[in-house]
Image (tube, rainbow, N blue to C red; front, side):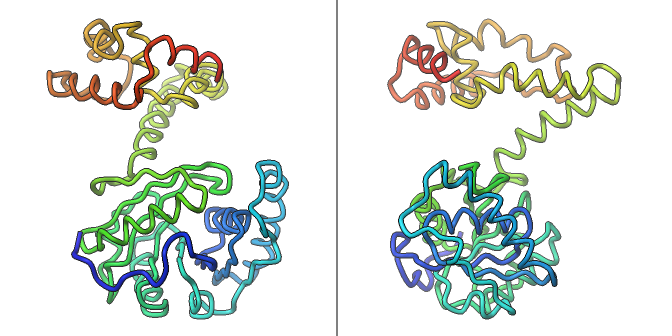
Length: 309
């Protein structure tokens, strides 16, 4: 990432107006989230019926957002849908782009946003898989362009993955990660670009294996979904796959689990090729689980998992 350029015009804590460019399922979900967090939101989408669809989406999401708890001053009335992109971003202090997943469109739109937005305002893309390095090629100030990848629906699923491109200012990544945190998201700031980011790669691996099983007549769609919702999905919601497997090793943790079950990586349980479980990978998993446990011992983790489920 590049060296620092123009600083953001305000701190993440002081943002009051957010612009959402693209108002489909993801963009509209962002609008609902930001409104629920008490921001003024301007939105723009080129579709002729975009405003009606957006307001219906927000209205449909609002009961769930009320149940979660709205921020002080949160209101659907704080949404303004503008006639042009330039109007939407004119006074924005943060911009979330959620256009369709087409690389050339992303490149041209991000360049247009960069030209229209106030100097220094961070522009984030909701892309599902494109590296920012590939999208920032036409922008005059690529330093302020970052990826802020959400999960659907953005107003309910807290995760957002943040990463910059080769020409992104490191300060823009830090600023946007802090903003998302202030705005109520759960943030993963990635150290490097990776196509599909983290969660989509894991999700895609499961999806591809599911497709293989259906294609080969090995399992029904209903069986596959139930195998997750009635099985490991319940545990993953609280601890994820790594700590879940660490508990499978009992008091010996991930070290015992890998030493005992490691050979099964070579069993034909998936169409994906398993990596070699060498000492470096083993130690990285063991150390990572100890760090993720944050001082909780085996008994505490088991109690937390059981209570959660």
